[in-house]
Length: 255
Length: 223
Figure 1: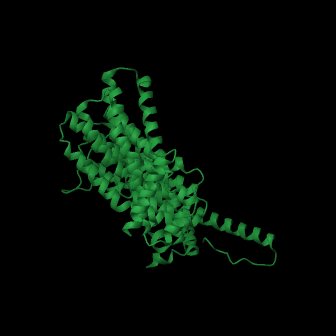
Figure 2: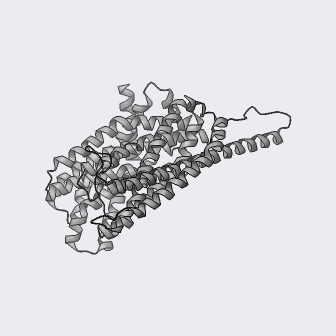
Figure 3: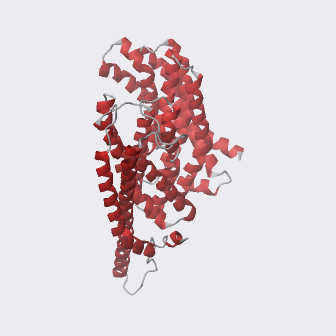
């Protein structure tokens, strides 16, 4: 239960400072290796060189859904345990998730234009990912709209949990409806249908992008914690100036 | 508990019928949309016939979004919501009453007016019954899910647009299955029941689950 101790903001900040360089190095290594193998892998017999966009598109898609799952778990943390770090986590993850979802849509469009002939079709998988993108935008907008931190944390958490219903719809949209988008080829009964030469760069890129995601996420969490501390210090200073001599008991009110 | 629920429901219906800006707004909105479209896309009757169900459905969705912000706001301003928190009626049931009265005063008139407006859009006569049925059932989902958006943005000064952004992702599936049902009834190959049952199940899920989320949002807003 070492991780439980990281819910202490101070320990969390020390942990981030300690592991940050190692994570960054690992991410760089994975991405370089992944890129090398991506271009060394054989072209697809049907799509030719076009298939290489899979090494960006698929990790982005996984991460955009994984990020929402992370937000939903944090939302439980906010609503059930009222933990301030859980709220910080939602705020940190939402914009990163929005960018990854946007990149999923953009890389998908780039891939679809030559293969399907159109950049966008309104089929189930694409529509549900677009809905996921809107959900991220809603989370970001709501978290900025309410000024009181504790109240906005609760509101965002409620919205995040309600939006969780979209995740299974995205995952199974390719099985439930007959769509243009291909079904899952990695995690399925009978083992992956991808050739090992293509699987290797895909997994390396997925690991690399996951590490990039974790890096961005931790950086944003650190910034948010520091920002909140600065804000509460400023408030304390203002109160001291307004009525000198009385030390307000609000220190660390938020974190 | 039952009398409190019914009293609340009756009061909300009276308020929105007798006040300006209740169900009249929704009907007026539908009138505006329907009379503008033929000028926007041209008076081609074949094209209008194709567009009619989708247009009427979209108008219902927008009318719902327009009227959502008056769900809780007046009760919040005169302090009635805080009374609800201490009343014997659970806040969840108060939300159900609010959503149901919203459905009765927005969706119900729109669903029955839509075929009339459909006449000028050359709506096919076999589409009338599916249109009314899908609007009535889909409208339940719209009103109940809408309570979450209205509750989350309750204390914001200009929450209207934000409500729309928050709620839009949840409205898209309703629109999809509403139109799918009408298409199934008109051209097949699916039978009307298949997408319609999904629409019904969405309404049932929304009615049973969203009051808890909306009540939680109200509690955190009033804290």
